[in-house]
Length: 104
Image: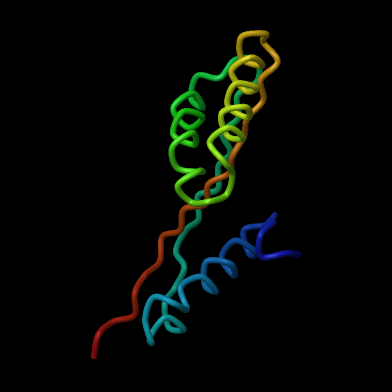
């Protein structure tokens, strides 16, 4: 089981615990209470993703990942897919509720 592909509640709790290690020296005593994995997907037309597509036009070149021309071509491709009803976009989110250890 990969840390990036948790498939059971126990795996999610273990991943949450590992991710809390950077939060404080007491993180090993933190207790994962709950996890909320979710996926958001759009098929056909981009509604949720429109803002992201437009944001990437600014953020990606600023980060030096792609040139403005390259990201514009990518964005225009996604917009054409949306107009044609063939767009697909998905992302996963994992939220964790962690109980901090009691302070001495």
